[in-house]
Length: 472
Ligand code: BG6
Image 1 (cartoon, helix red, strand yellow):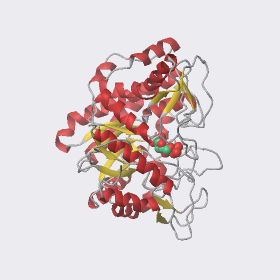
Image 2: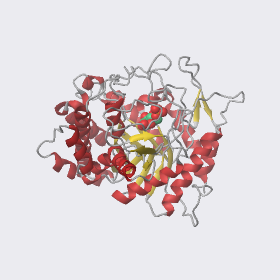
Image 3: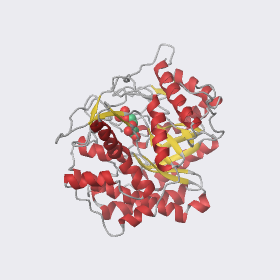
């Protein structure tokens, strides 16, 4: 955009795209899979549920062939915990494990590097019914066993592991919308204790991988939060402090725990002021300290613009993905300088460069983009394609920003935007499409689920062929 002397993308850069299990697999009652909280989620009659989704379960060979045709070097997907352990714990479901073995085999045969998320929102229902992430005694050992099974069974073929997808979004949603709990909002003490349990589970799983598997399997493990840079709305000092607060509560509370093994002091002060009682047990800080990720994967969609807030109550506005205000710390406002998607998400390519710089400054680890993309209502043209020039424009600008970050010396190892194929949005159905590949189904009418290449498919194919040299 503005920079002279751009560096090229590294030679082995992981160009690919992302999905998650509950959003694309379908076959929710097949192959011995147990139920997850997503199977009972209901986002209203207007939207479909997750039962068929993109039917990746039955189409994975065809979909991977299309990814290969696009020239993917990597594919980031998640494993459904309840497909491997139908009750979240107990006996392994071999059929479920075999499904993922087959997916990975297909990817390897196509020279596509699997990037595997261990947990992407879909807690097994059997665990949720016993308290889920609030029940530390139950869920932590179950998660450790699940992850250990994956390392044992799939670890010789998987070199990039991601522990928990968007723990920060889960926690902030628990506070604000109850997105993962049928609308039940949690108190700050409940939400931040669930979050603490996730920190412990994450750290134990990373430490186990490092101790027992990494040497032999030569893979890497890290978390996958959603990072949103926070801008101050004005140059008022109190708005600058609000932006720092937003950065902490949205990003650094999580990354400080993952990488430095410590609680961010500003977050601790907030807990103290708000009377949040953290169930910090003897040995917990040692557990956090003993685990450090090998890299940081992060999802980036947009930045946030904030101002000072004395408010006691949550801001109810939900028109923006990042409206995760924390009363008394910051309040989100619209950024007048940015365009929005039709779903109200601000589009900020330079924010991606900003995010890279902030994360790099703080942690100095290799960085991987595991999500970035634009959700749009789309229909198939008469000539069986979708002219998604807006998506090409979106990616072009974000990839250019990433190239600038690389030119500034930041170690970025790959780009896996959201998504490879159309799938079910987390809370806005199938009509909110993100893919390079169009799947011909509607919210309720499944049609034949045929796959079609969008215009962006060919654009991304060409871009990967050039290793991004044509992007500036
Ligand atoms: C991320 C999630 O928050 O954003 C994905 O990791 C999600 O699961 C994506 O689908 C886009 O959000 P949405 O609500 O448009 O589906």
